[in-house]
Picture 1 (cartoon, rainbow, N blue to C red):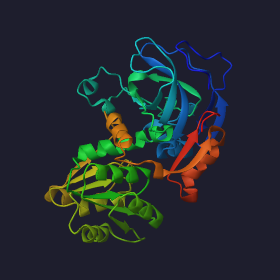
Picture 2 (cartoon, rainbow, N blue to C red; picture 1 turned 180 degrees about the vertical axis):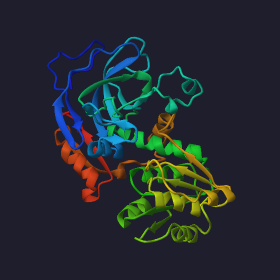
Picture 3 (cartoon, helix red, strand yellow; picture 1 turned 90 degrees about the vertical axis):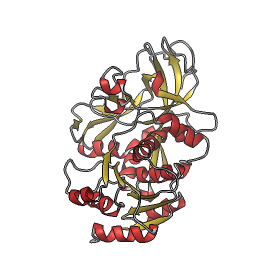
Length: 366
């Protein structure tokens, strides 16, 4: 990493090795051109740590998520912490040397959704590692300064990178109105389910029950604060699982946060949630699923969706910096950029109990 400076610090000879998805199942380490000097309101960043997200793995294996199709080579990665190495005109909130967490989506700022504060719904949002936009698994890239959040000295780069999935959970819990004294069900104990569990607890939920098809994930959830866990066995019906959840919590949950995207799990969420309660669909599943909609209607169970997050990074950072949420136990594996293929394979298979797999991008990273 070059020394930080107020002027453009790159000489043109720096290594800009990048993890490029050339086509489905063809992830290569390639040299990409160095970024141009940062423009107005932009910063030049040296990437430090990137977490592998399920969407990264999905693009790698299938080349598409819904309508987002990889048609040209694309750099993967969007869970990012980095170091500012140069700033453009108009940047007053950051300076070279600052350590930052990077919110990966930048909206147009002008449409009605942006103007009304719903910038995550902006049709023209530019989101890292979402076709055709390059991601952050590269040594250097540029980003808008107001979507970079300075990390306190006691918050690590690793925690900064994980603010991205944590922001998903924060947005879900805010939209669900999770509050003190409530009983909450979290469906799915993958990375998003686990951070959602911790966020629900930090928001004041009295009891949280979590479900999963893997006992080791439930065991991890209990270490992170889950009060109860229900292991879903093959052949179990959603109504049967819902009864086990009710027995564990002593009542039906006020709120269910569905984090798997599986059809049977969405069905479980509707059956389990109390009359007048809310179901939040956090996990991304297939475009169409079969659900007991009439059951939800006659019991006045509200069904809401969430898409990414908005205005959540500051709260996510506060939760981590104050110790309300400890993200470090989620980190199970660390790799270098040169080991990207091994890192992705570990994330895909869950080998070695993988939960969050991190890639250290610069050679001098700790």
